[in-house]
Length: 485
Image 1 (cartoon, rainbow, N blue to C red):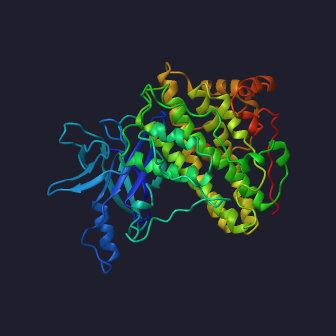
Image 2: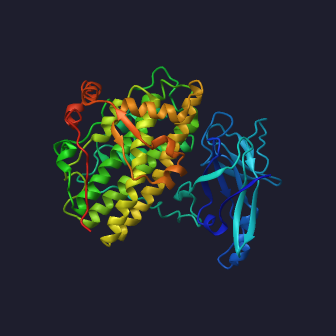
Image 3: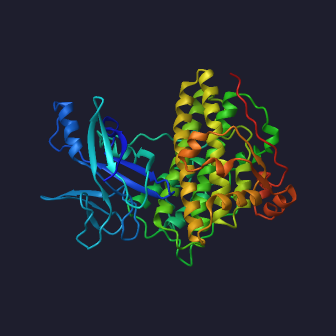
């Protein structure tokens, strides 16, 4: 049995559930869920060593999706019996023994042995690796959510969440009073059609929670009546009035401008996460539930990023809340250009745009650090860590799609998508370490060039409804937002 070290034990004592993503040297992915059960009879006086010893015996790891219909198991109920402890699927109540993976229904999920070893006076947690690959690597380890903090939040206190700070409060309820969405596709299209940023964030949180806890009728992507997403997500009038060509923002050097620009990118990123599900789900009925689990998590991350950045903007420049400064919509240009192809969308948005974020984020963090803005440094470090996992998801599903489409070579196929759907060179310097962690070897991005000319770009986006409001059809300049150290 081959083992993989995942974490010092102490780092797993903050929460009771963690998401893990593993990748093999062959490029295979496994998404796992780690359950750490608490000691029922523990008290405030229980010695810490006894608590840790108890934790050693009650760490379980299994596949993160139910083998029945692929439900996300991160919010499974845990039920304890005399001789076993089971995780109960939130969709159809299938139960799986945390040790053996067996279910009374006859199904079985993969479980992985866990060992805690004392090394250099530190207890470290190892897990058994999957059998369908070699040289497995831990790509992601993060708590499922603050719902599973240990100790948990007091019942009288809601889970702390940062809300975006903007000009106005939403006037609509989170759940529409009539024709409330009942599928994930319906929620995706509703959120895409939500212009108010705060309401977009609140609806994202609500929809993801419904999906994870099995409170939706279905994903809905296989339905012939799945709703169609908008060509361009609407924005409030105040936003549209401030939308300019990116060239007009070149050289802006104010801290507030920088935070505002980053928040604008994250608002579009929320829409991109929902759009890839709503736009391509119905045309790809073979997409497994894990695809939607990855991209709902991404939507939730982007909403968190938007909220953190608008809160920092409010704290550092109260007179200029989100929506009061010029913004651009160049990110949606690429969404429009790739609206015809899931493979193209994954390549351009997630393996070019988001991968470029991995390259520039460290420099942005350093500018904030030099300015003494520790709050923004902390926010950007959270965002950067999450973005590595987003590029990982892009790589995972791009390679999955290549395999489904006849065993295409992922590197050659990616470079061809960039040639057709990108303009100019993709230049360094590159964040080699984080790109490699996300699955992008140098063969993906070295000497990478797009050959789409401006006329072709105009042709692809010029006929899209709503595009004129966002200045997408204007010549696009490089955006270079600088910060005075």
